[in-house]
Image (cartoon, rainbow, N blue to C red):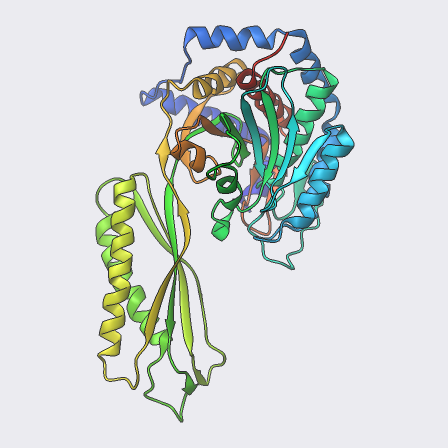
Length: 436
């Protein structure tokens, strides 16, 4: 397997990365640099005694951080079933010395470290949920210095980083002017539809001024743009009956076949041109047995685009395709009719922060000063919500080396993983303002 090859040939892996970076320079890609004033601000903070103390402590507790990672990974957190992990995460913060920790109405864990001035809230976030269904074996297996388990990197590593950052700030007695919220969110994956972060930004909720998410990816990732998506469940229903005795009765599965063909042909013609837009039929279901005409057939469809206008267009194509296919199938001479219900199960807004946004600039500067290459990315993360609302928000990588995300063979290797923790802490302190 690829990850096994890379683990056994780490030097070759690093050479490959260096080669890619060099090739990027050769084709004319310029390195990202921050404003001189921002660089001075970040450089000054890096020299602060309390920051250095916190960094040293992060190195000292690496084994403890790994134990936290393993403990949390082995607590299942399927979509909509994050409660056990949330309770454990809350208790870990309490044990570490954070006084104000709670679980809100939707299941988010919120630990508040009060600032000296207040009036501003900076959130450091990682998500609690994984993509894996109930019953998945999440036991961690360690082979050499690599750990394997579903969800080990996405995003349980992020949760363990939040704990390490709080512990380091407490140990170094770092005080910030703004309040810092350490948040474990629910519903980031799949049909969770960002329900955790949406709840935190609902009308009437306490104002959040800056948002920093830790999610997948290597150190250097600066996700400043939200990739918009809409998701639907298309549900075809009929009477159902015996495959022989009721032969000729309208069959929802057959209607679904018409719908898939109609949509994929129309959507492909649209996505072949213009700004990148995608579509995917991710799940299908229905039926009771091989010798029964099903009473229902369904599919779940994901559509994404870098452009909000094109996202609306492909959504319209989907809706029209479903209706056209339904009518075509019902007109084939079948007995009775199939009915259709379209259920929206996901709506993630798009948006993009300017390169000049102070939080983005600070992330670029800090990444460069840590000796890594920053890259601006676009993704579908918790950051979509604040970005779409104009709130400064970025998603940064968890660091280390990993692979197999969203698979049963997910793995993570602590290759300079502490550097990602330090970077995340530094960005949080800069954004919240260091109180001297």
